[in-house]
Image (tube, rainbow, N blue to C red; front, side, top):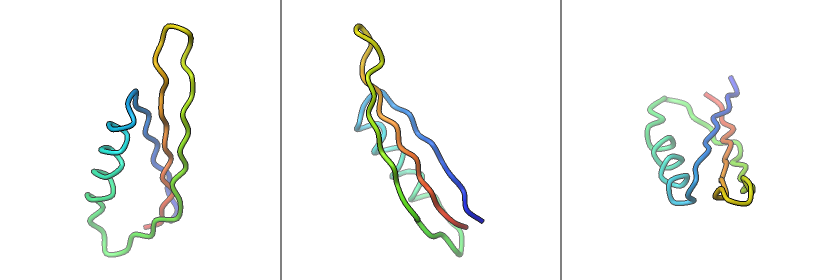
Length: 59
């Protein structure tokens, strides 16, 4: 079964940590990482940029 997991963080370091934690905690007998999509987007003039990742995987 294919699944998708989204992450949205204000700092790239936080996004990296969340992705690494997710991948480390996948304790299944079968886990296939299909792709990781990454995007940064501007959140307005006075608001910080945000960083988003989507992990596509199969279990």
